[in-house]
Image 1 (cartoon, each protein chain N blue to C red):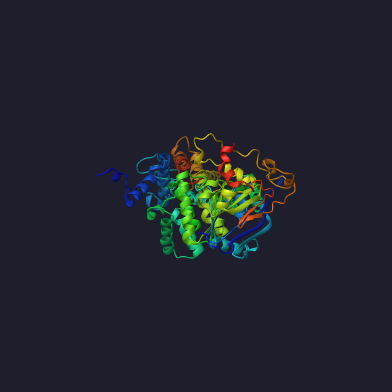
Image 2 (image 1 turned 90 degrees about the vertical axis):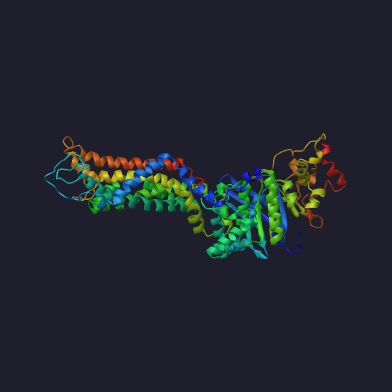
Length: 293
Length: 342
């Protein structure tokens, strides 16, 4: 064997495998833990009807305010409903709403921001002012005002949150677009004769997604807290539908005798916040395919 | 190498202005330049001379708020400045390609290299996906990327600078353009890589009858590959001609000064000095009367305050904007003894 053999390139197959492994190896530990937490919560929510040992409104007056045990993991409430099952159903509803209000806002916001930053001039001036006005609007007041109009229930959140939350994504995407449009590869899309929609959607937007996705990990938590707060105030889904906020509010009067009613669903909210926070942290530290932003 | 024919690209009396809050800046004052099919033309000048703007004007890629306010750009008999935006896109897609100085940012960082090539082939040439894939691999191999099947799956950051510039060349020439605008394509590369890229450009030019407008601040680069050269200073083309004539018989004091500032191997060990050009380049916001170079020129005459910077022929194909002609006599001696005289 000569020294030349050592210098020879490894076979292609081997390199492809190395790369696939490398992608996970580069993922920071906090992102893995966070993703694990989120996956468990999401699976529990999605498969709530299969996982939950009892129905969400199944009454059992022989077990009122039972402490957590193997038959009732989270204990029961004043009507003998199994809190573990109720929490799962509540999580299912709440996460669905949170995802529905967060990610469409992200898409709209990134597109608006990309357009504003790419074209500049009057387009930018108009869109940027619209963003400023939206961000300056008191968030909670708008949400409660919308609920006052459409009545209590999740509809208010579904309408009010997207009205506001696209704006932060738009501002984020716009500021990055301003940097991006000066990059030679954006000039190259013009030099190659690509259409403006192609340059924007295929070449600019993928470069803008990363920071918006990182920001969205904060946003989903904020939206879950908002939803929980509204439900706590009685402005969310109406009884007997379970929401995390309503369960917490229900348990408040029995807090000294049955601490678990409010505490355990509350911890689920905290756990979700922790998971999302870790993922966001990991994404912002990790190197993502050499992306520039 | 060069084919004698009518010009493919013809720029006449080009003027590019920027209206800024701080006043009007004139990036290019008056530039005339032509490139024939299959020919490599160098455009040389220092930073701020307007060479990049002149080059980009050929495909109307002047950065905002710049405007082409005077002159004509003609490509194969068609008026580029009068094209509708649709026609202009077609023109950019099929007839001209462009490569940039910085190969680190001229490829999209989040798309695989093969995908970027396939995109051009599909969008600009209308190839089907499978065809585009095969063709992309051929193109990568053609610009000297080894193992293209594997490299096509890589992202730009996994390539070295020289390799990225090769990919960029493949991308810019994928739709078989007839003209390639190369804006300082080797400035960000080390010298060995630079030589390889220049060799690649020369080969592509010869094989595909590709005309190249090569912008550089480095006479050494220009001398390696160009058939003709245009020297730009302060927004004017001050001298243009075949590379040999410019090298041995430059008539403009700026061209001479530029040539004298190149380090030469043959002067190593001798007690010689490289001559820097005294003074600063002209401010593009100032109005100039007469010659733009007069303030730094060692051969200044009263006539320099009134001349028009028009190019006058010296010999066939060789034109200069200097009417003083301080080097008209005793030339050979001057060029070879340029360094020693200092």
